[in-house]
Length: 595
Image (cartoon, rainbow, N blue to C red):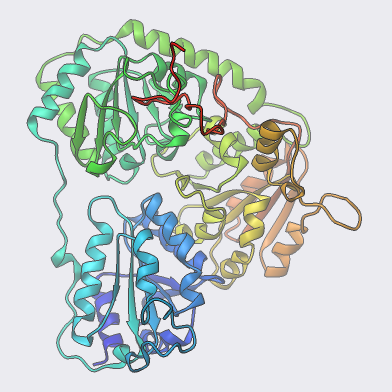
């Protein structure tokens, strides 16, 4: 058989149901072989980056890999940003690209990246993947793909890249494709007993403990149940990072919502005053810490941090830790709960819980006028809240794009299912949700999927509607239409008191705000579309779209006078004076405090 036939056999052995990608000459042999496997559904995006985003979200929804196939040269390069996104907010993606025939290496033929060495694409992808390989022998192709598959799924998941030259794709090989499952570890990394016991001792002695779940909990099956059990055994305030929003229902009495730059006031008040913080699956990013400025979100070293992460290098990266633990989130939470239970009923921290509940009540009172705001156009905070309620009503999934939309969704949307909220804020690539949402619908058509996006991000990716109609994938796009990059305009005005013309979308000839008519655009692609101009009309439009079984665009005018939301006492300040120390946690400063 040909190598490409063996690759298709491998896909069947790996229980692959879907693949994504874009046609191209360097992949003709593999595309020919895939004709013989119609049971594996191939979904062609309208841009290579969209295909990677779809596979990224497919993995987040299923925990399984759907390969991405693209051609060489510019088609392959179009995936770089999306692969970096999957690396930063870890998602297991297997990207397989074609290459020119080995006979032509180094000759500088069409689309060969020969500038620093023959067929050198693997070196472009090394910094943005967990592994990158160029297949050199036909008889090693399946072994290399199996190894790449293992690397993608092991430890902290991430993207991998394999390039297969044209002539190697067509070479004859003999044997049987081996399933990747025979090469993958099925055990979970557990903390040693001493670390668990020390954590339990510190936690039980704490007067103001806080439990925080990060994105690692979202990626660790069973973490939601393990978190719930631990909170029953030892009731204490519970917060999440942005990526773990909703892993314990945000309606749960002990849940204070997400903590960080645009989290809830109650969550930040609690983490500021904690004496012990158990952070599971969290890496303390800039969003979560407000650029590591001490005392705004966390007070270090007054707060003792117990950090648990599957990756050793993330532990202690940004804050000193009292206990640093390398472990899978669910495994650690289960072991810790077992240890707490073994020691008998915990004395609890009733007064501390009461204080946290007081902060929570103040927060609820503060946002009530926002989430019920009757003004037209709609307050973006109410929009986020209404979308969250629709996700609850229809058992849907929400994919939040990048931009000002995040600032409202993080704080004002209430999520009550561990798999209902998805975001990719690490690399923060605009269009991740708008284009990748189809991966969720392909993976699980039984649950509606919403991409909540700004007009800026949707304008980058609107051709995704063609894929949605072509493959009958009924995603719903909710567009915050403000004719601008809202976060850019507001941020530049705050920092410099003025804005560049690029911050807003304006017609040069008339000076009027400009955007395409998104409802007509949707209809041109064959989807449905509706424009919402009133606060009361949004929930009706959401219900209609989510029950229609069709791709649908909801274009929502929003109130332009509303400022970007930040947690009380927090802003988006960046270091801007090289010769002056930035007030973040650090053991050294350029400024003498006694001078």
